[in-house]
Length: 335
Ligand SMILES: Nc1ncnc2c1ncn2[C@@H]1O[C@H](COP(=O)(O)OP(=O)(O)O)[C@@H](O)[C@H]1O
Ligand SMILES: O=C(O)C[C@@H](O)[C@H](O)C(=O)COP(=O)(O)O
Image (spheres, rainbow, N blue to C red):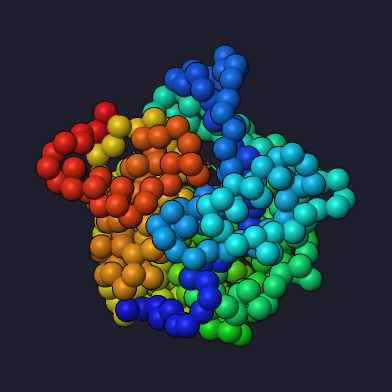
């Protein structure tokens, strides 16, 4: 195993980053201009992953900031009901608002997100509000790259990385690139690279790694090149996702593991990465092989992309295993 998790910790997983709202179009297969109604869900990539980990039976906690409004209270209540520890979910007192993500589902393959993130509460999390004790009592810390997009959340996330290093907590960086949150691609590359240097596991799509490599020579967009670079720092596992084509995990010991994707009746494509991450990390914590963990993540992703929501559709372990068995029996086909 290229990454060893510390034992005897109160929490198995803690994430730092945004807690937001998804407003998913009810009238699907049409552009946003013609969409009249939406269903509200808890959203934000790290929130979705944490909910996924909790559904998979993991003891989880969250470090973040919510608005002092109805949306913030909705998020807090949902996390609590999901069994996620919220002692480090801080309420903003400056009048910041909850980030909103309106989803446009034009077709199962043509989806986009319209984000409202001006004065978003999640980016107001300050370093003094990050609990060192919570990170020290967790086996794994997941950092969402978007938390690095602006101060003071940027410094809070970097401090969390330092606390994790000090206490031997395994760090997972999900690059989670959302262009509208950043000032420039150059700024994104600088801060995501800084966080990646301090991370044990790095997860991103090929396009997200391209974003970080804009000043380098990787003209063939080689996944192996990308992974090797991070093995020269702290990383033990680098995962590069390729949508429907599956994903590749490289390990520091020279391993290269490919995961196929499963068939799915796709409603929308977003949520794939978050459910994949939850499934994969659950597998690693269970002591499964990289291949089995990736396969589990891929099946979890199919369940979410076949559903209307991201957070609410996060599956249990039984649901994922059942999905894999049904695929093996040929009961699920793409469509
Ligand atoms: N259309 C699809 N059909 C089946 N599985 C998919 C599909 N899209 C994504 N997945 C699964 O979800 C994983 C993550 O999806 P990807 O689109 O690469 O990430 P992200 O959602 O972060 O952009 C993929 O590696 C694959 O296993
Ligand atoms: O991350 C957000 O702020 C929006 C998410 O809640 C949304 O559902 C989504 O885009 C998930 O994206 P993915 O898993 O990276 O595809």
